[in-house]
Structure formats: C-alpha cells, structure tokens
Length: 328
Image 1 (cartoon, rainbow, N blue to C red):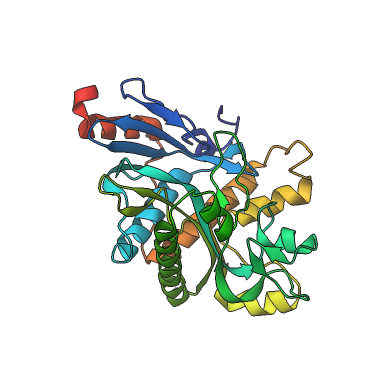
Image 2: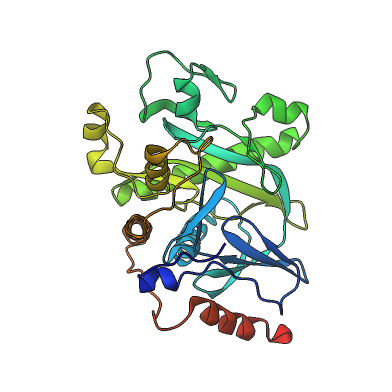
C-alpha cells in the first residue's frame, strides 16, 4: 500500500514497505514483511500497516515498533510456560525467529462476551446463536459481560487473502488438523499463557479480555508459540478501573487495542458490505497513542520514539546490513 498523503510528519515517516531486494525468500502479510533465511531462520519486520476486517486500510505511526516491543515483553514474561520462536532483535521493529512448521489453526482464548467481527463471540450471540465454537451459552447475556469461565474458540488459518473461520475441538480432531495429543498441549499452553497475561495485566490496572495465539513445531516436533503474543493487534485490553461502571451503563469499555479502530469503522459503514472510508489522520494518531499507552502501562517503560528526521526504512536497512552483512 502507498502511504497516505498527509500534513503530519508522523504519517510521512510510517513504514509501509519493508521489502529489501538484497534478502531472499520475501513474503508479505497484512502487517508483516518476512524473509526466509538459511538454517531454519526467518526475519519478521513489523510495518506500520494497519489492517481491520481483513483489509489493509492505513498506516499508523510507530505501530510496528510498538507491536514488536510489546510482543518482546510478553515472550520474555512467558518463556517458562511455552518456548517461543525468538532468536534475536536486530532493530526495534524487527525480530529474527526460528522457522517453524506452523500448525493450521489459531487458538483464540476468551474471558468476555465481546467483539465486532463476524467470528467474534458477541456478534454470533447477538444473531441468536447459542452454541459457539462447541460451547453452550445461556440466554440473557449482555455485550462485554464476563463469561462464567475462560474458553477456547479456535479458528482455521486462512490462505492468503482469506478469512479465518470458526471450528470446534471435535471438528479439529475429526479432520486431524492436529493430533489429539497436540490439541491437548495447545489448549493447556494457551490457557496457561492467557492466565499469565491476565495476572500481569491486572497488576497494571488492565483487563486482558481475549487473545489469539499461533503455534508451530520446531525441528524436534516441540510446540512453540510464534507470530506475536498479547499485543494490541492480537488481543483486547480494557481499563479495569472503569470497566464495571461502563458495562452497567451499556457503554463500550475504555480500551487500549485495535477495537478502537474497528468500532470507528463500524460507526461509518458496514465493513462487510460497504467500502471503508479513509481514516482521518487525527483518528490514526489517537489510535497510535493508545498502543503506546498500552506498552507503557504494561511494561512500566517509556516508549522510545525514533528520531523523526531518520527514515524508519533506512534505519531498518542499516540494522539488517549489520545483522546479515553477507547479503548487503
């Protein structure tokens, strides 16, 4: 995608393209550009591209750096629960990882009845469905209500450009997407990762509402958590202090995550039927500030904004040349 024209220097220095012709095995998804390297290594560069409703819509200042550094915090804090794919961090927006054989399902863990996309629990419940992902739900629940217990609602992993689709534990085992032993381990590790996330978030005044995990197998067949973990792109976070009051008033929770942008889009159009309008610069900067606020509240660290006079792309290229001099 081309950068949006803007009067804001912040918007002008967003990273939307991290393709470097010197490196082998380039691939691109909605947010990350990746490279396949020898010795079972992959290079992941988090760009500032912003997706929602399975479309890349805009660029958000500092987003790639916030995602990489938030995931880094969580990978460090959960390494005792599940091994992760990280090898090194050549740049604040870049991570070198182990190349895994990725498993064909995503594990979504939910503690609240919420969401705005078609595969989220609340829209399904609001349509009248009472068995979601194999779980039975009682009548009378409200949006953003805490569930009686934390549940796993897996989805299939879409092909490039496709949509993830709900699937049940029984369907996963019946179709042998993973073995019964693998499923049991995935479920146990996912719930343990989520519990750690809830615990640490609560200490910082935050509610970890739900999240998505991706796993792969390493060269020994061990299950490894990959992609990202507990970031505001893959998770919902609510401000704990105001949650109950806003829930009782029927208002959306104060959030520090991607839902802010989804709700803005839904207020403008039906994203599944209508063209999504261009997102105003002020809205994108407010969105960026939410991601930064989440990082700082979670980690207790100040987010170090890069030098605005230095191109993010040029900075990353310099870091890659140091990390992988054989290609530059």
